[in-house]
Image (tube, helix red, strand yellow):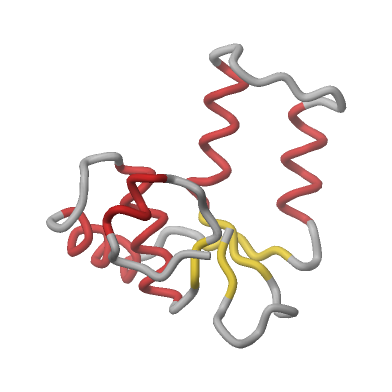
Length: 106
């Protein structure tokens, strides 16, 4: 999840890859959702305050730039590239993203 600096009340961005991560965890049996995966995903994607940051050409160009400067985890590269391309700040506890020092972290 991301926010734009100076506007904490603004909409929140969610990288499309962030939607994929819990999907894989459910698929592999590492995450259970009491109300069901479909409900969770639909509620998240249709929440009025969230915008899903989709993949586009500009993001893929930024991913390639980022990939030269950080570890090879594609999800982390997409998250960092999304932050840079959208001029947003990721809200993450991910140590690898924090260590990269490519983006400001909250």
